[in-house]
Length: 340
Image (cartoon, rainbow, N blue to C red; front, top):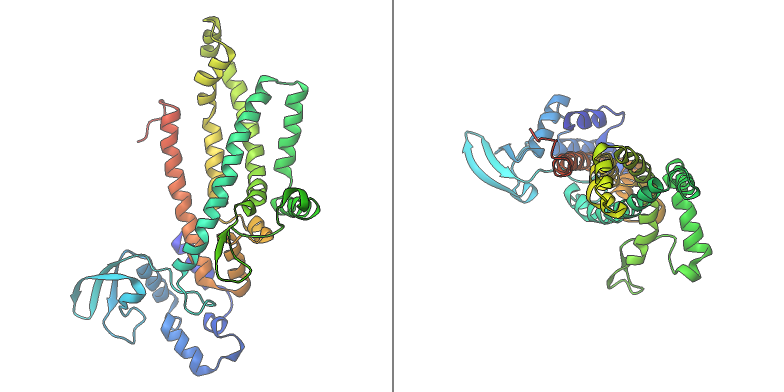
């Protein structure tokens, strides 16, 4: 992933040094910026520099004129040993600095925005899980009846409507037309300055609309998967045995059916949750939610390559972690699944 991201963004047309300097550049400034960020080196050397920046154990030159010269404040590094003109250090991965935020570290940019996206994603996926599983169970219990058909129509609409359209519709309807009843705003983030610009207030109500909009599509998927999986489980022999023993329908659903029907739901939830953490770009941008998705859009508009690359790398890491976590959950839900 690191290799793909690096070469994808470094073979694009355009000079990164000119992107940073804008229209006021001159030849000396461009040369200085290229030397500072290693843009004057061959592409393979730049790639090795990038790997070195990301690696927790890295190697740095003792020559101040080299890009890889060790700056402890820059890398938050601890020296291990020095051999000849190379120092080996242990450090946090360095995602470099933003082109447009006056040397602000990409890790700081992501650290300020990712928690907001995580809060939004967790809220949305909780809505999808709680409501989706309940509606899926109801739909399965009342198969082919009017209630089942109504839930199926709702879930189909939820999967069909694009997120950006849902966001615009909800913002206009509940944040503008019905504002006096809902007291919700069309746009707003979790943390906002007061009217005097001195105090940061937490606005939990700004979470309601984007969380609902972001949760609509996974909610629809959970309903469909839960319904179909539960109907399949109802046809299993052990369910018939449980009914023959005189267990109530509630006990059968609670103790036997639901747990065994959750595997496809967990798979879907993990994928959607990872996608939500990836930014929920449209939802965050339309609602003005200061998360990673909105930051990626701004970075794309300004060609801030380090922010884009660092954000994509963090997203890829989150996908890996979530998939590992899902494998562990599989083992808990289904003892037949063995973690090798």
